[in-house]
Length: 338
Image 1 (cartoon, rainbow, N blue to C red):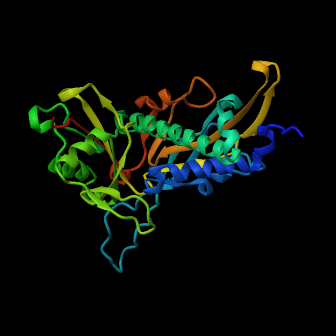
Image 2 (spheres, rainbow, N blue to C red; image 1 turned 180 degrees about the vertical axis):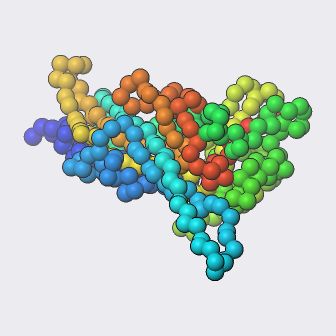
Image 3 (spheres, rainbow, N blue to C red; image 1 turned 60 degrees about the horizontal axis):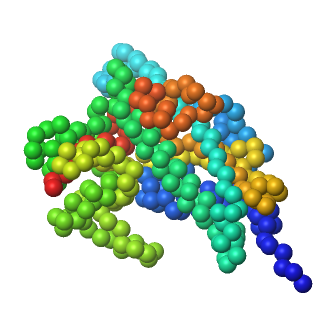
């Protein structure tokens, strides 16, 4: 009896595969696990659609109306005059819907298919792939949204840049970090995590300023700096080299970034090209999602149906709509002592 090679179509069930990849991508992402990114799929489902392909939303953006804080001075009670009825004002945040896809051929997976559970291997590798892609989207969005300087909508109040100062004044240190946290004023206690380049982490480690905390559920110890969880990611911008290198560190509060998963018309499919290289299988995976800094409105007009990373990174495509202190992100630019 001749063994028949396992075919991708035999092990990939599209209705199971795509939700598994999405969920696994979340589990692998430190920004999700730290609480910086929270899932707002249920919140936006009426417009966006859910992971159920039977419930689709249309358009290229998601509108998220919000109530502004109550404002105005109180009034002295007087039995000869009526109190004034004030209205609560509203605003609208807007997130860009992103549609992305990727195809991998079976030849790249043949060795794994021969000696492991194909479903787990393929799904885990796709999950790792999308985790990296989600993080590229996040940092592109941070670059654009935090960079907007349009009058009346600027994010300048949430940016702390010491990289242009001279000598040691440009370096990351404890006092400069406190000043960066202080950009949120009386809301600074909302900041709970810090995303930094590995070079920045290594500089802090040399000064023995990292506290390692063992998670209650087990696993590897988690680094903390000044009481804030450290997320190390070399997608945190670094420009230049050596003593002139400028680093961008981000401080985050819980839920600073909203993320939502939708469902493309055909999220996952398997195909075969019988004449290509003697026969080749391929797996297509498509994702529909948002990754949005809460309180900074998307206003771009993408060249293609949905925005690219370079368009997300363009500052003129964004407008601040929350009070600056209520946006739980601070961008901190600095150099490192060599």
